[in-house]
Image (cartoon, rainbow, N blue to C red):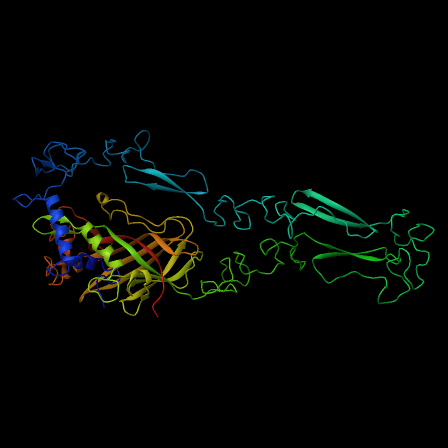
Length: 595
């Protein structure tokens, strides 16, 4: 069983990136990387001070405070006074009331020119408005909302009121919506507007009534006037009154223009006395009653009247509550737990629109440490982040240490079921083992260190997870965060088994953005957790690790008295505990489960 990195074992990536023997392989790559960094940094003064790369004069680095603005400095006032505008790191102080060359604003300026923006509301409900940048380089970012969320006042382009209640009814869009009897955008079939109303009954007047383009209906009115030669004998008329009336009506036989005969009590040819066709969606009319021209007219209603037991043609439950729920129409209706727009099963929502406990596994395929940067003391003090990230990236994708049929390092995020549309869903996160090669990999929880249970909180719009304020070093560069159609989960702690050394990572949070429909990838992933300084000092790197074996884990982390770095990246919990918040960015994709 491999232990390159278990669960969220940040530390194992630090130490095992140097593992191997002196005959080549990972150790040779590690030594070559260290030599390259040492040659690039190659600059340790005899007194032990390690100056920054940017301060080099005649090949020898010079410290901040030499009175010369060197490459990488925004100022140098030849002192180490941290209370003036130029701090002892040779950068201008944010908050000194002056917009320096490296700033776009200053937090000490409360209004007017040079004041930092404090609000980004563009008054557009279809954008997410965010403050971005450092405190003295703030700007606004506006992301376009693409998801349909009821009640957010945003109607996205091309969306109907059936998909989002924030959208107005749009006549002519080809969708039958509330308050519409038809839509001219529907060419044929249910929902199409009628153009003719002839019911082929001589004793009805047929009218096409148009209130608006999307309110068009047929009306049929009984003919009462006696008009010769119109083919209709109105109710109560006689041959003396209307030549269209049969002189033999009531003789028990159907002759001439008769459609029935009143003398026939029942069966074929009998005149109807009622016209109820037992169809709630038709209006039933008896015309020419008590004559031999009796006939029934049945007009399909297109009005949406709740409680009339009729689901009018083309309507859905969203338009008419008399309509039955339709599984597969992407609308969650009564009796449905979900509706993903199809009638397929094994995708989290089955053919009857009931939720399925289908497990979907995402395997990390990239994972890079963003903050803090680990430093290695190997005669010189070097930033080992690039080397470590290279080793971790290779371990996620290959089977090398040792070659045993399993990928060297695997982390999983598992949803049961995967349903980004739900407010929350069960999720598990942690270390496991995935079989090699990568192209046909399958993952097994049982071989790994187990997955920690959590609840994924889903958001259609907004930022799901971000670094905690004051816990990152801006010089390390930006940290990607999941925004829109994303999730986040919290786990109180995770036990990391580091080759027999137990390390507990606290305040663990994981978040990522779903990609695909259904989701097949996680992008802009952020993993964060806290390692206490006490745990780091008590955790000893295994003795077989080249150069670092037997030393405390704290010796790699800036801020520890054991670390060679001059920066201090330590953070403090509300209870006063000192340590480091670790931040990783990752991506992941769906892989099969190894049964």
